[in-house]
Amino acid sequence: MTPGPRTVRLDDGRTWWRVADLAWDDPVDPTWADRTGGRWNTPGDGPTLYLNADTATARAQVGRMLQGTAIDPEDLRDDAPFVLVPVGLPARQRVADATTDVGLQALGLPRTYPRRARGGEVPWSECRRAARAVRAAHLRGVLSRSAAADDGQELAWFPARGARAEVTGPVQPFGAWRHEPAAADVPG
Amino acid sequence: MSRTVSALRRLDPASVAAEISTSVDDPWTQEFLRALDARVRSAPLERLLATWDLSAAAAGRVFGVTRQAVSKWRGSGVPDDRAVALADLVAATDVLERYVRRERIPAVVRRPAEVLGGRSLLQLAEEGRYAEVRAGVARMLDLRRVQP
Image 1 (cartoon, rainbow over the protein chains, first blue to last red):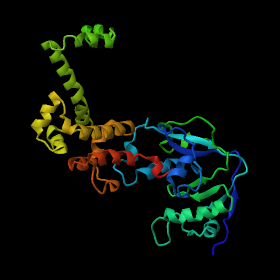
Image 2: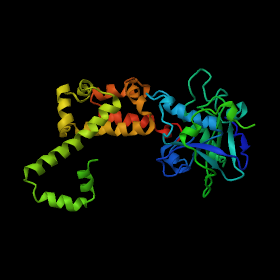
Image 3: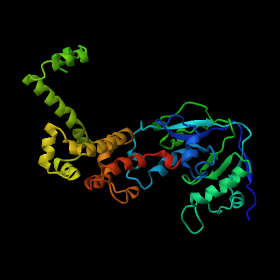
């Protein structure tokens, strides 16, 4: 039997990042993932919004989407309709930790997550099973190591009834964020 | 645009159509309508050939006809029995043009891909799997697969 999830409290007021397609009606709609399912939710489990902890992880999602396709990231147009959306969440959100060895173990997931110890990616079915325990513990989501970026983190946010994510700033066109900024462009 | 066409376009389209339709048996009107129809019907084919960088022979393999037939279609329009196939390929092209640099599309459609079962979009088209080309392009660019 695995212990309950290890919890972390998200920093209030921090910015999360979501990659969206301009064709979507609402880039922060958590009901879509509830209909289709995702890594941390089975369809019908409840609204879920998938977010990235930083822009590098968001950028990696595009690369991950194109893995195994006929399209290379460099084939994309600068004005391709992928946009980067800054997102804010309500304050005082407690989520399950899937970023540390201890947190992963508490969720019944391998310490090698997102990979299995013997190779291959941890399947969604295992993440979904762990996420059901997270919902049962009334936590607001799972903060995990990214499956797209080596050092990145992702959040699957489970909004409380009536809670909403907010777009907190200008939406950035693809050409503005598709490439890693040059060192000279990074402030500080 | 010529001055004649510019002048025509200043008129109300519905009124012009009503007037022309009164003389629909007139040879000039018939020829005008036929030519306009052929242009409209062949435009998607021209776009496909240009965007995918297909020769008439290559397009013939895609549609299962000779290159001479394709050349004929370029003048007279694509026949009805190829309309669905062309619509699927043009829909795929629409999506590619929205996301992919125009000059990269010929390479993209020729590149084998795991998500296409190791085939390329062009190979699928040559096998007559036009709907799979359309669905394949949509799937490749669907962010929801990795971030729903």
